[in-house]
Image (cartoon, rainbow, N blue to C red; front, side, top):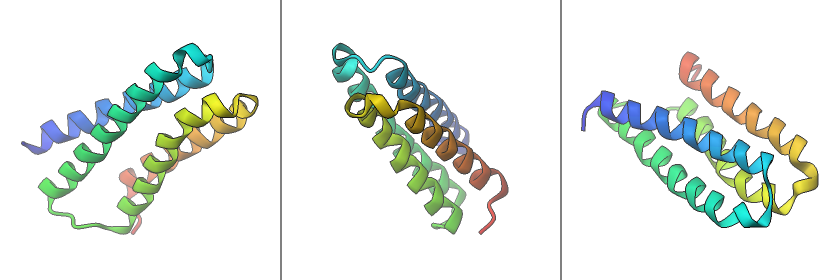
Amino acid sequence: MSYRTFLALHLISVLLMSGVTFAAFAAPHPDNRHRMLMASGALSLLVFLSGFGVMGVMGLGFPGWALVKVVCWLVLSGLTGMAFRMAERIPTLQAVAAAAIVVAVVMVTYRPF
């Protein structure tokens, strides 16, 4: 696949995964749990595969900023399930999700290391 295909797939799946995470924060009702967790898991896998696809096509290896993005991905991936288990802490979880997204965007934009 080409660089543009991997990049488009990565960006779209990151946006959708973030949307599913915040949708789980908005409606942590048990009836939504199965559907949200399935969508989050599938999108999380797509984010992972397309992200490494972009790095592979670019020939970057595994720089430090990519490791930080992997940690942000792990945090964001885990938060959807936490929304259903820790409904009383949703404002804190939202702040953590927003911080993970901001850190990931800063890392890919500036590539500090």
